[in-house]
Image 1 (cartoon, rainbow, N blue to C red):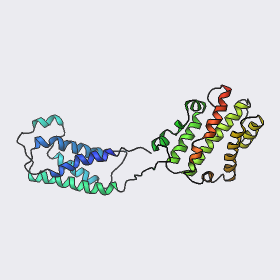
Image 2 (cartoon, rainbow, N blue to C red; image 1 turned 90 degrees about the vertical axis):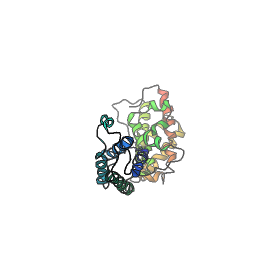
Image 3 (cartoon, rainbow, N blue to C red; image 1 turned 30 degrees about the vertical axis):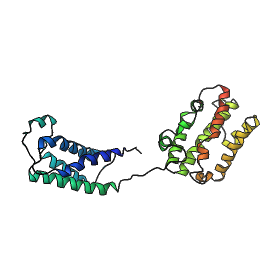
Length: 268
C-alpha cells in the first residue's frame, strides 16, 4: 500500500486543459513553454509506476506526438524558434483534438482506479493509525516494548484503519501475549532458558506473586474471550468501533509501569 498525492491529478488537469484553446495563428514562441509543460506532465503519467494508465495510453501518446510536431525536445532550442512562427490550422487542430480525447478517456479511466477514502476512526488520525500507531504509547512505555511487540501494535492500527477487525484482533492479542510473557519472566525472575508458559498460566502465577489484581483481571478477561473463540478473534470486540477499547491498550501501559519497577532493559 502506498499513499498517493491526489494533487498530482489537479496539476495535470490545470496544465493540460488550457491547451484545448490553442488556435491557428497563435504565436509558437509565446506558447512553447505551456505546450512543453503539458507534454512533460502527460509523459509523467505515462511513465508513472504508482498508478498505471491502460485505456488512455494511446490518447496520451497521441497528444505527446501532436506537441512533438511543433515543440523541440530540447529546451535549449526554444530560443531558435522564429519569432514570427505561428501554429498552422492543422497543428492547432491536432493538439486540440488530442488534448480533448485524452481528457475524455482519462476521466473515464480515473473512475476505474482503486481509490478509496479511509474513514476516521474515533479521535484517531487515519495517517497515525496507518503509519504510527505505536505513538499511542508514551516514551517510557515505548522504550519498554520490543520491536516485535511494537510491530504488531502498528499492524493492529493499520488493520483497524482499514476495518480489518479479525486481523486487528490477531495482532492485538499477539502483542498482549508477548508483553504478558515478558512480564511473567521479569517479575518471577525466570531465566532466558526457561520457556514461558501460555498466557493463562502466566496470569495465574503473576497473581500468586501478588502482582496487580486489577491488571490480572483485565488480562484474564481478554484471554478468556480469546480462548473461547480462537478462530474468530474479531468477536472479542464484536465490531471495529468497539475495538477502540483494546487499541487504547490500558493493559499495555499498566503492565509496562509494573515492568519498569524491575529497572531492566527493554523487553526481549
